[in-house]
Image (cartoon, rainbow, N blue to C red; front, side, top):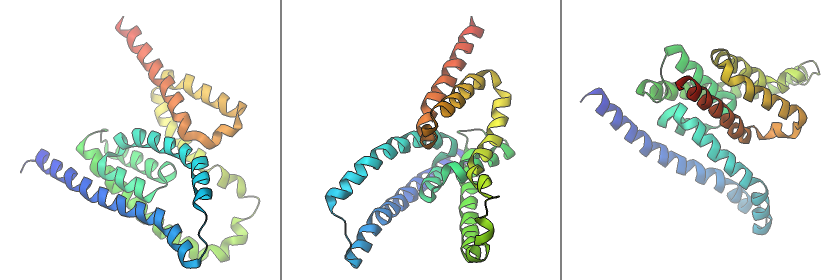
Length: 223
């Protein structure tokens, strides 16, 4: 069996296992609140549930579709299943996978990228579980220290610092393409601070601007 055929078989098995586990996780996530409510006799009315879902679910449905379209090509099959099942993509899984891919020099869409993404996200998930377990054990002794006013600004800017450090590497290599969407989005978030809670949606216009600039530059160079 050659490497290509082996990789195709690996992907088929990955999809089978990934779909089964995804269905199980969805049933558990959606079913556990209703099960707990039924056991404790605290079931909400279905009307209130439907209103709450329509108020929040529709927004996050669009966000989920956007994240799926953006992240799946980056992570491949195995990495995508693991990332979407374990969650915390933006904060942990995507930076870990991108950094691992860059360290080994794998290209997006290649078999190497699929394997590296899967291994890096699996490792990230295991490390997260260990860190959370240690954090829970140490939460009470460290609570006064973690709640100090001195550390609060740091906790509020962890995600921005993480992605800023990662983004700089890509901006530096494509500054002519990145400058306009970066400036535009910075001004937009400063003028409309409420948009900071909708970063998944803002990927669409910022990505569209970057693609348009790249296309215009391509047409200009071709001409």
